[in-house]
Amino acid sequence: MEENPKERKMSVILRKKCIVKAMNEYLSPERHHKLTLSNLDLLSGRFPVTYLYLYYHSRSDRGSINISNNVFESLKTSLAKTLSYYYPFAGRIVEDPQTSQTLIICDNNGALLVEAVANIPLIHLDFYNLNQTLEQILVSCLNPDEFPFPVQVQVTCYTCGGVSITFTFDHALGDATAFGNFLSSWSQLARDMPLSCIPDLDLGRSLPPRLPPTYHPYFNHVFVKCTLEDIRNIPKTGILLKRLYFVNASSINHLQTLASADGNKRTKIEAFSAYVWKIMATSIDKSHANCKMGWLVDGRGRLSHSSMSNYIGNVLSVAIEEASIVEIKQGSISAIANNVHRAISKVTNEAHFQDLIDWIECHKPGLMLPRFVLGREGPALVISSGRRFPVAELDFGFGSPMLGTVSSTIKNSGVGYMNQRPSATGDGSWVISAILWPQLAAALESDSVLQPLCASHLQKS
Image (cartoon, rainbow, N blue to C red; front, side):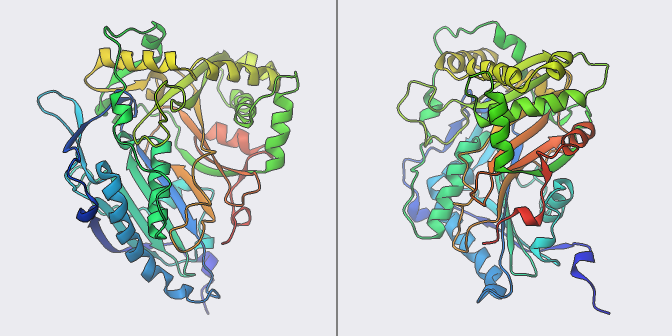
């Protein structure tokens, strides 16, 4: 009796791996051999950031059965070209033994590219349970301590001819804007198109502290100096569930209407944050009187420099607001959205970022993090918006993706995370990638706004 593909247990086998170096003919002689991390780079925590993209091809598509053979070689060639423009991504991240400063050694050590094969069609992936899916499609092929590649890419081929690509970056290289520019450039070079973004690797590293450095005492309460060991040893918080959700455009618009009911127009992400905060308050046990929410804020456009849109590095801070659980439970969506708006507004200005740069300057060397990220300040959730991150645009020459999202390979998290991305359907709906504690996941799924992601939510190219 023939096996039902839907009942087949997924297995993934490593087929090949290679180290891709920047094409020498693209490299110019003025490349820096060493780059010192900027003050804002030190706030990254060195967390691994993984982007997952799925490309669907049915067997009925002409030539699609052999598409995977062409994909790997095409990506290998275009990655070598891309690394020539983004040369730190082919380097090594090390600690200077004399100064204890973290450096990027731009020696063209290369990026790791891996190809694997799965024994199921792409459409049979578990799109909702990222704990299971990421574990299955990320083959552990090299010890990161022995082979430190800050960029690692895995191409997994499926029985239907479809492909998944995971891109994992060391956060020290940049933030979501930087990684989005890198991936966009790569996809453009893969299609022999001119680059829409000429990367700037210097501007953000020339954001100097004031002399003497000066900052508001608030920063001592919000941020803390830490080490890689502190980050690796975050206490077990139970924030372990990695999930993908789908949110209809109609639900987003309805939440925005509720959040703007008092006459103050609120953004979609402010409205969504207010809704999630109310749900979050119901999931916290009675031993906690308060809870926190945070929002990642991009400093590009907040600083009085020439355009930083092409800067490749970290320019992030975080807005944090604490409220009583009773207040959140009793408050209206519009009242909570007003609190969200005020909290974010405090951070979206040049004075905040200059104070942050100065605070980090006074606490170097080492890494820095918001205190609550280390999991020692009670229940907290961080929300980030990826509305400008490329999703449907990320075509490497074999069509647009059916899904593009973000997650992390971290095993334990000190806070919950929710990251919004536009759906590849292009109809205004969202895909939410989340790292949650079980009670919060259950509370969110008891309502109809966040739907566990499934194949019917995805666009087939």
